[in-house]
Length: 188
Image (cartoon, rainbow, N blue to C red):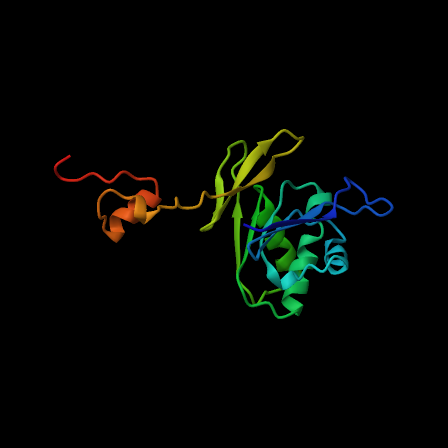
């Protein structure tokens, strides 16, 4: 599995010379995940050749501004660029309200679907389940509800050398073995 991490920003509270607000892009097998979206994320994405159209999921760790103030601008740019594919937006309790209020008062309607969900405070939960990868929230200690994100590669199916099998197995039985399940015959 190919994994590429680009740190677009790593500074807290305020930007500093050559350091921007927090934003990371993780590419796993041609799926693109953004973690946090501070101000300047779009400029950094352009600088480091991150195509906004390829971002499939955006995770927001918490609602301090340096972690999400660039989000509404990023979504608006995606709209201007003609995005059509669904975007998964996952963040803390309250993110939905913030996005709704901003869109309401700017009278903005996106032409692409956004699947917005909020993780639960204080518990680890499965947020994304893909064929080769899962993403889970990790509760963090902070002054407001906060989560980290654990990207885990799923184990590959086991390999079976058919020449070493003592008995002829059906394709279904081989699939069971590759998945780690036992094959039990009727006679025990």
